[in-house]
Length: 290
Ligand SMILES: [Fe+2]
Image 1 (tube, rainbow, N blue to C red):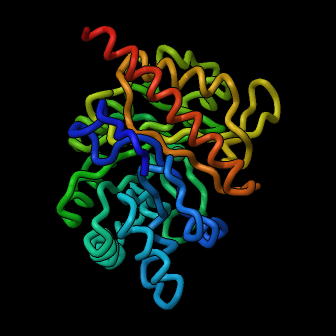
Image 2 (cartoon, protein in one colour; image 1 turned 120 degrees about the vertical axis):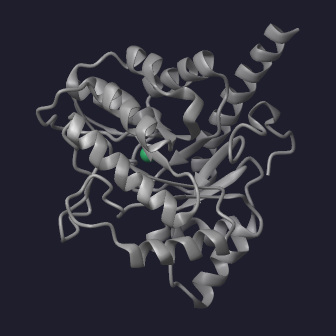
């Protein structure tokens, strides 16, 4: 963990500093040479619930050494199928067992009674706000904790009555849940839908932030960005992270990388970049206070 604690985020957030997703491809290297710049780790609980043996022990090794946050894949909070209470019970046991500091999901849906393994856009309507908020409240009741919802990247915008940012605010207010802010997804949607990323950032329910994601995406065209998590982070997305820190102060931020995973040392350069930007803005905040 960082030799210098990220004190500016202590207390307000469930974790602090810079995070990295724990992936099977990285586990051996991270065990031999634990990265000191990583303050917290993230896993998708669906990939680990019920996993025993050497992999289960490996997970325990890391969750005993790093604060853990969980980012789910299959809740389908906006979907038509009933929520899976058996899954939620198993999820609660997993979160409790590993002392997870936060559980977040996507503000989207990923199937009906089947599983599409994709994140589909919820129509931005008042009815959908009430429907999704009620389901989030149910999840929070079963898990006995507040959860976080992540703004997702989309490629189509179903007809709706609200803007994306209005929908996001309405859902988290009515559900009284946290916000899992994804900086890259704001940028991707700004290009895909012609939105103003800075205006979006101005409108987020910032006091509800639990932590943030930053990631790389694929530039198919200037107005078609694919949220692959398989590329290096683009300068414009780093700039948006800076704009968010400038607007709201430093918050915990995790590097998402799911495909084209480079050697650990290369990946850690982007974690180092998060840390450097956090320290820069913390120093600026300190100078304002002084
Ligand atoms: Fe994300």
